[in-house]
Length: 166
Image (cartoon, rainbow, N blue to C red; front, side, top):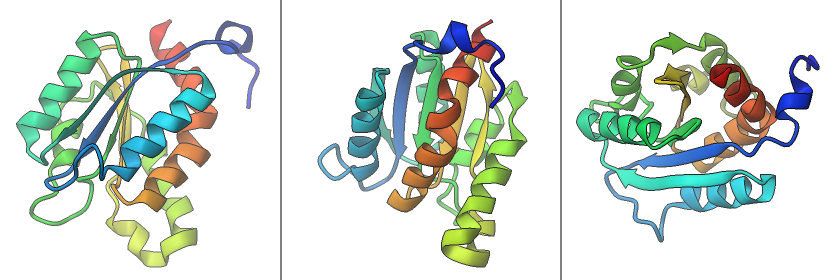
């Protein structure tokens, strides 16, 4: 990692919102939400919002707009990135992004290949920028969320938030 801007972001507390996209999960059964909340706390970041929304484009886009308006620097969505008729999250988010980060999806699928083989191509993980916030959308499986968090999001979250905010 480059040390560019490291001093400015070294101790930065990132304002993060979490959105689980699911037609069936509740706060009690949302393993991804529970996991990500614990990881954020452990890393010293601030959870500024959490919700579960149905995989309906309007609900996904409303959550995105609300959390950027509320000051979230990073918004992490999980779920709805597959290819079934019910998977709308990718399309809803992609339509709103002002800048894309193609490398996120590419790296996620590369890392997923190691876990699930050719099935990694079914993931439509995406990241980008909307209204001054970093938006990340991962598949909803617990292994996918953990992979994205540990290998991609956590190592670069401060850097991403700093870059987008400057």
